[in-house]
Length: 132
Image (cartoon, one colour):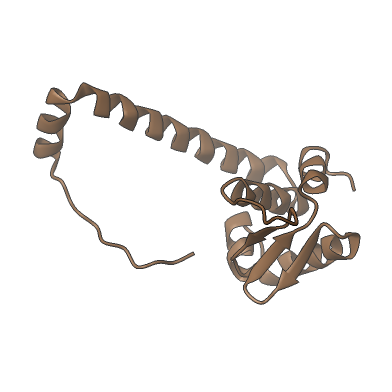
């Protein structure tokens, strides 16, 4: 998702001086960096060892983790199939084919620029086993 942003820049010297007087911030930064490294490692492992359907399921689950479900239990992800395919390393056509298969099973519902997850548990089972 693309949003307007305001960015600030802090030079290396200023950053080091800041961290020297606030070591707690340095520890927080290390935690964030470690988390990002773990996430990057996971993405590389997925790309090497998993087929497209499992990669797509894992990306949907990852995005769903940051969304609160509606009262109905449905989780709405505002993302296009093209964007999801890019994240999973697949074409829009391949992504669409798999999502339509899941839609026929009742796991997801496709909308314009959105994917509603109806059965997160089924996606989680599929992502871990690769079996429908």
